[in-house]
Length: 71
Image (cartoon, rainbow, N blue to C red):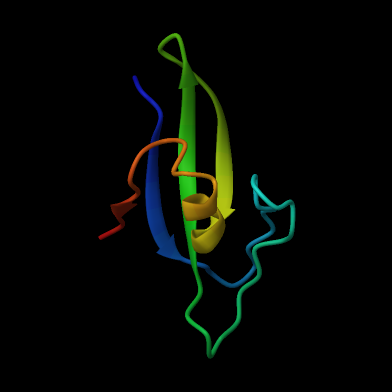
């Protein structure tokens, strides 16, 4: 397995912090915010999930490649 990322809407009740800036990724009903969620693998083994604000993922130079759209 390799590390990969997907982009999707921030959902109500989200409690994740951004791996790039450290700030909470908060739901806002009228803003339709998006987040990037990355499954991180090391030597073929899953090690963690990282969450990013969509803008922060780009600022971090997309560490797990372009984020796929969540269908």
